[in-house]
Image (cartoon, rainbow, N blue to C red; front, side, top):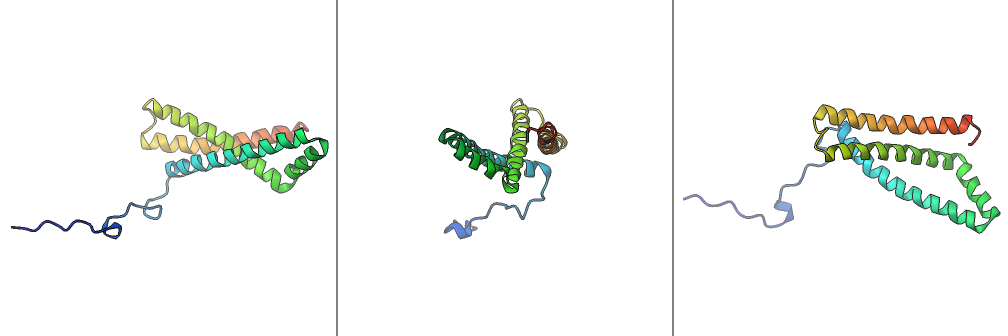
Length: 138
């Protein structure tokens, strides 16, 4: 008669899940991580909008100071990053809506839509900023 394998005694005896070092990076993995990261960035961006509204409510001096903060190079980089985040998150959300219909799970399609969402985020942000700069709004 054979003996049964001993039951695991604790967490150290249990197998561990694969981690990022085990998986080969691919666009769908990056798109998933970017979707979460842009969601966090947009939540932080909402705080920047709240700051803008509060500065506006506090009067012209506060608003001018907040506007100067956003106009410096770091502020501009943050605003551009938020613009990319907004457009990428929009495209990735549409991608997920299509997935909710049961379509787009084929690996080639998933890769293509992930790359398209990234490209859309970057190109749309550059386009919006170019229009703002060349129209004198910026």
